[in-house]
Image 1 (cartoon, helix red, strand yellow):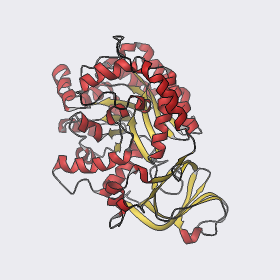
Image 2 (cartoon, rainbow, N blue to C red; image 1 turned 180 degrees about the vertical axis):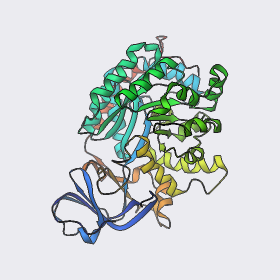
Image 3 (cartoon, rainbow, N blue to C red; image 1 turned 60 degrees about the vertical axis):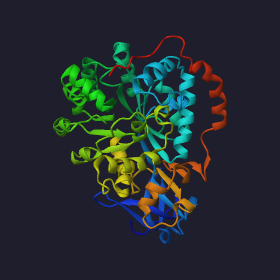
Image 4 (cartoon, rainbow, N blue to C red; image 1 turned 180 degrees about the horizontal axis):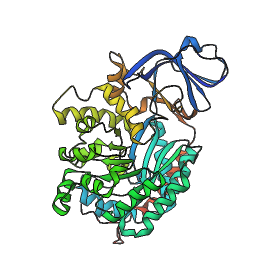
Length: 453
C-alpha cells in the first residue's frame, strides 16, 4: 500500500475493505482494513482506513466486511445475445449455429440489439463486470448503450467474407469512428468472425488495416479440436497457422476460445511479434463437449488468458465469477494436477491477465495509483463465505456474482447495495418480450451464414 494520503478533497473514499492488490511482479495479495481514494475517475491512493479517516471526500463508502477487487473483465462475449438465452440447448455446435442461432440472427433489428445490450449491461454490472469485449452486429447501438450505462468496452463490428468488401469496410469504419467514445471508455477493434467464415485474403487485408491504423483484432479461432482437425485436412495448417500466414500474429490479436490450439502451434505463437491473447469461456466448452483452452501451454508461452463467457445463447449467463471458478477446476482436471490452477492464479487471470488480453493492461486490472477507478465491492458476510481461512479460495470457489454489492467504473457508482443506477431492467424486459416472437422465428429459411468448420 502507499504512504498516508496527500491532503486535498477526494471524489470518493472506500474504507474498511480488504483490498486485492498486486506486488511488483503482479502476484495477488490482500491488504486488510484498507482505503481506496478516488480522484478524477482514477485511483489516487490505496492506503489504510486510519490514514484516510479524516480525508475530505464528496462521497464515502463504508466497506467493512467486504472485499474490494478490480472490476472483472469479460474478455469475449456477444452481449446482445442475452435475448437468445436458452434458445438452443443440448445440441451439437453445427445444429446450434445452422438450425437455431444463425437463422434467428437474420431477423435482428437495431432495436433488438439495443435491448439485448441493455439487459446484458445490467447483468454485467450486477455481476461485478466493469469491462467487456464485444464482437457482434449493429455495434454503433452497443456503443451507445455502453456510453449510457457507464461501462467500459472493447467493441468490434463482426463481419464475414460472404458480405463482400463492405463487411470489412464497415468494421473499419466503426472502429475508427467510435474509438475513444464515452469519455474514453470505448476502445475498438477489427472483428473478422473466424478463419472458417473469413477467407485468407480478407484475413490478410484485416492484418494490413490493423497495422495501418494501429487497431487490435478480435476473432474466433481454433474454437475446438474438431475445427483444428478439419483445418489441417482442408488447408494443411491449423487455424493458428492460418492466422500466422495472414499476418494476424504480427498485430495485436485477441483469440476467442482456442480450445483447439495444439502443442505444434507453440512455435508460431512464440514467434508472434504482435500482442497475442486468448479469451477462455469454459462453461460453453463443457456444454458443447469440447476440450478446454490449454492455459498451461499458453502460460509457458507468456500469452495472457483472459476470462470470458461467450454469448448467453451458448453460456446461458454472463457470469465471470463462474468462469473464474470453472477455469481453476477444469484446468486441474485437464492437467491432472491439483496444484494448477491455484485460486490466486485464477484471480490473476480475472484481473491483470484479462486487462492485458483486452489491451488495457496499463489502465485497469489492479487497484493501484493511476489506474482507472473500476472497483467492485464483494460481501463476505454470507454463510457460504464464512469462515474465511483462505481469502483467495473464498473469492474463487465460495463467492458468487450475487455477492457483489457495489460496482464502480471510472469512479462512478453504477450499482450501490445491489441497486442498479443506470439501467431500467423492467422496461427493457417488457419491450424485449413484445419483440421476441418476431425475433425467434425460424420458418423463413434464411440464415446469416453456414457453419461448416
